[in-house]
Figure 1 (tube, rainbow, N blue to C red):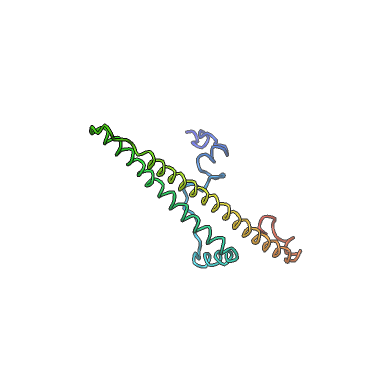
Figure 2: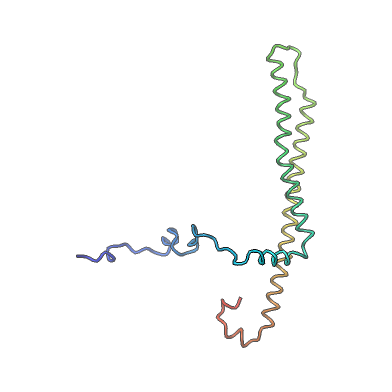
Length: 166
């Protein structure tokens, strides 16, 4: 009898990565790791963000207002659709003098465009403020790590494997 292991094709590292065996995407389909102490981890994160409290609060407020405006937009456009439908319906019912109220339709569409533009502007402002909050927080975190590494004795740094120190 022949040995089955010799008949199996050898799988290269590229195929292993595509099949989910090791590689960069080896954890796809695996359950995500969870914090052992979520409550204290959240407290520590909020403490790190304390200097950016005003920025974080403004990001939340800007997000709520922006999303609210973008949700209201279709309702305003619905009012414009109703105006068009009412004009067309009156005309089809045989009223020869029925016309679309273009002035009202213009106001509704202009208001809808304004709502969408303001919503987009607030979303951009939210992203801008959030980027600043994240950048300043990461700068402080990197500075703290660098300060701690600089306080370590050289003897300890030399004794640790290169990637394990951080």
